[in-house]
Length: 250
Image (cartoon, rainbow, N blue to C red; front, side, top):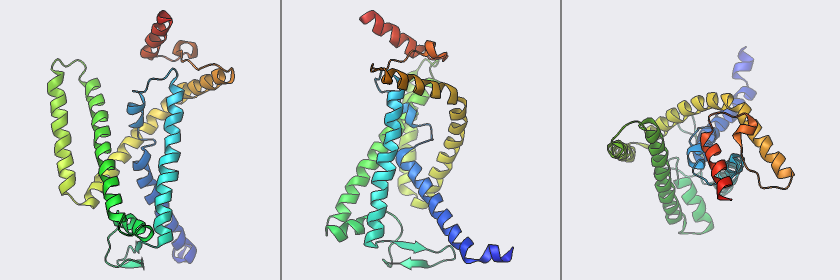
């Protein structure tokens, strides 16, 4: 028991486990896979078959996390612009003394390749990332509020309250510490993910049927068109209306 608990292998296993856990937690932020937020944006796409947008959403995970995030990580590791903190205090590795964990690592890594460019480049990139993220999350919030308040007469009042709440949350996040913001984000993402995993399990059957229908139509050389009635998928009235509208327009 003691040899297994305090040996070298368990120690390095814990380090690797913590690294994987940290990577998964931050990787989820980059592509939102499994959170249930992506479908709200994907639902606005004009496609003839839902599997088309589903495949695009899946591909974005590879582009965002495996390409962009991995490229950033490799750049930081190769240039040595990082520190490794210890859980007991101090550092296991301190390549850049006095520098806290965060975007400064990326800034300094870029500076080693193109001197003087790192700080400006990362600052501009973070600005656009933060701005587009806020716009996306407002769209998510408004979509949910519109659904919840569909029977409410004064929609303008509801949307104005949503905007005020979002602005207050943005202000609170900007004056709080980064650690608190990440902690709140981790809790929120965890709750969303657990709820969404349940929804994914319940939607497995129609989801697989939709993908198979797309692949069968694609194999026949035709542009896939979604007909939920043919697959026995219920509560897809919007797709039925869209299908009938396309038939009448032709």
